[in-house]
Image (cartoon, rainbow, N blue to C red; front, side):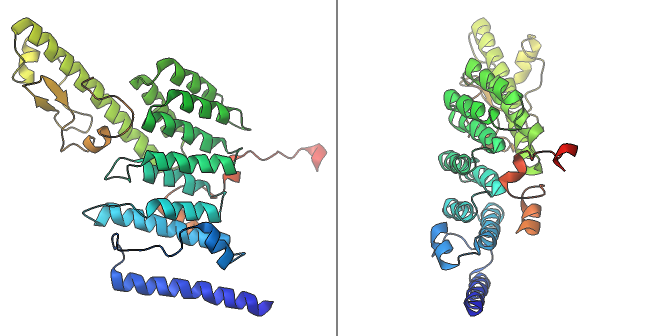
Length: 327
């Protein structure tokens, strides 16, 4: 029996060495010529039983490397392998909370920042809550993503209420569910969700994503105000304003046409429409999501992703407290 484990350990080491040689030959951040020879976690479980946790670590590190390489080093960004990589990771370790949350972000964020596939991101979170039904934080993410990326207020509210019923869930989840149903997709509801996500997330990258999306909503609000002012100008003068200064001269606009990042808005004088400029960091973000447009390895993994003490969803489920009577 001892020799059997030795053979398995040598096989795992051989996989690592082969992967390293492939990386050296093809380049650390090679593009879509990369191929996954094992497409399911179940295949890996049968190949190396008892090593599921270790293999989940390996595949999660590979997922982060692949996503980071595509985003930072590849011009024609493609994320074809992202979905199978993160699904293998979570099949090997169904309690891998970080992989569910970050994997959903990687998949759902608009291209080129992410794969632009919110359907796959939501499916990953759905897999997470099915395998970890008491993990209220996964229910929260699922509800948020349902609303923010698909605009399905009814599904989002249902998922948030499911999370609110789990042990240790914050009370505001049920309040937020009611808010989403009441507003039915308005920007105020989206702003409430992003603000809640930014305030509740333990991970800095998620908080940064929330901050950027709040800036996007602010930019869309201001662009909408300026476009409305241009419409009033057209009614008064029979033409669209040639520039923002004409709106200011008539007292129709006081706020400068600049988004929260300091980039001037784009303006189409033929249509009289202000919008987020293409050279703004908010432009790619404004092209994704559900909000309406203005004109209508434990250590290495912690550095790459979360700032949490443990990867398991068990960390999100409150533990019973010891009492004097229970000692």
